[in-house]
Length: 214
Image (tube, rainbow, N blue to C red; front, side, top):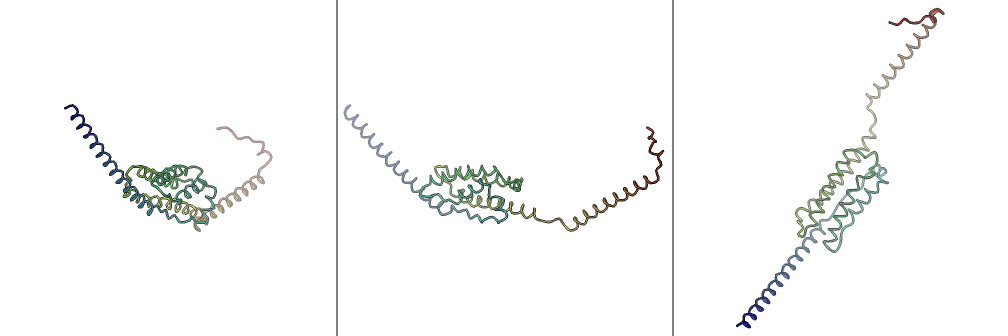
């Protein structure tokens, strides 16, 4: 009786073990198919079409290495596996955080810094989603497009700063400034004439007089 019970118990364990193994295999196959599908979607949509900056902007960012390194990293597409995309997203987050360093003086403005901050927020979100076991592609794909838009927004803001810095003073402002200069000059000439007249009419005794304290 004991032998039969032991055999039944052993048989039950074998059956349970086989069922678990089959479930693990099925889960593994399901995960592999999901990963292949996700990789295909990321591989197709991982595009950052960033136009080049204007020559005048480029002349100011030539020494901004953090910006150059970030854009180089952005344009290097991951290959082979999902882990490559995970590693890429982490690297982009790190290099994005470094953009706030060594910003060229002309572009070190709140408008540029706020856009860099927004870009970093989206990069961090991308890293968070891609690091998940089951990557939500419906959230990742829009983020990829938004990151491109944020980079372009930073470039446009830098270009706007250059344009504004080159706008000459309005003609009316120049005329007003010239008029003010003429008035000041005329006042100085009048005062100089008064001083000369006062010196001519003054007597030696006037120089000896001292003003009374009131």
